[in-house]
Image: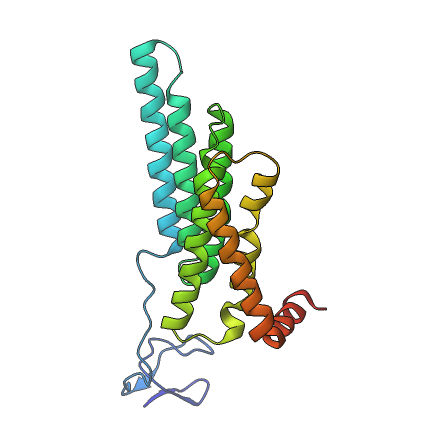
Length: 219
């Protein structure tokens, strides 16, 4: 064991200096009781910086190429919009990669919102509300349910995300009522699934659902 003569204490492990006075230690060092935990080289901060660098580089290349070919900035604006969307979705995926259910929920909201924006600024053909919104809602709810069962999560760990997914599945119905939907069968399937899900939650897991609402919203 190592000792510090100045502080007159014993120091466990293998240290270079006294943790109190930073003085030299004497004696024989002992192996660390717990292994040292090394931080991952490719952590969240590095990955976010990397995708930001790639996005900025891609945008710069698109603008430069567009200006060289056409003498002005035209189609590169569409490319930049796509790059921004890819950067946003990838950033959310990295930020919540350890919270997979929250990741799915945020990706659902982000992807459907970006789809509506793209549809709106490219002439509004309705594909965002006809297909993306209902199909993404269905996939999100099914994914949350399957992951929760495979990972054997407790009800409180996934109930909120199922509720959000269930309520989100009624947005295609609102679009249908508002006359924004041209192709109805994805909306009908999504709405039926949301009704079945919410009925199952409130009828068979009513107490758990109520407790989750009270806990999350401090009711």
